[in-house]
Length: 309
Ligand code: OXD
Image (cartoon, rainbow, N blue to C red; front, side, top):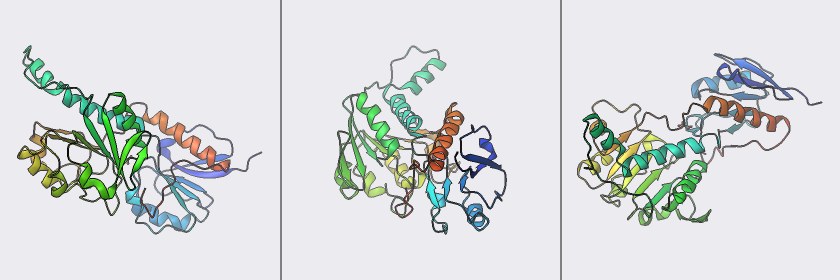
């Protein structure tokens, strides 16, 4: 017979199935249950969480439902409390969103739709194939690896960038220090970076200048990884092919931003991870990680707070 482990869960997840050994305690507002050993957050609430720690003396872990945990990292974490992100939950759908953006561009679906609205049987737009094009995925975590598989299956030449270079799952991986050499000649630069002290404005004017008029920049990580003013200048001058941004800084973009109106820009409002089956998958993910906790197995998604992901 398993001991019972109380885990606080935001009431949004009240559909969680029973997990042997877990006593779910649903909360709204402040989770005041001093016996709780785990806390499942929705959404990440940094200021509140800092205050809650004092009332949760038995807490062993905090679980988020997001991939990024940047807003929680600056907190003063009590010793022994581990942080877990939703590793794996968003890989497929975020990768699909990136692929959809890319195919929308190469197959000119938006211009075709505009022609359709004019009832025009037009071929007056560029049509290309992804096969043979070079994609550089900057931030080769789980989502990046899933995307690299998809792009590989499309016949693309896929490379990655991560802290240390080498080879992973058959693709060339550039080290972060080699980025200047990696950028020239890529057709797609796809940012999937977590936010850390090193990633803010990491794609700046200097690095944008190393890209060419054929390059499209995608960002599905954190908006502040790109210097948006420099991006806007590169796009306006034709030195860059286009940009597809699911994240921006700030969010939403100011209405005065020229990016809203550019034909070579696709904006989606930070929804790359959303899909109709996300609630079901989230419950299954949370239940499985809680099962691992009570059975003393390694939970998935432990964040190294010193690295920031
Ligand atoms: C995330 C997100 O999961 O931005 O981090 O949606």
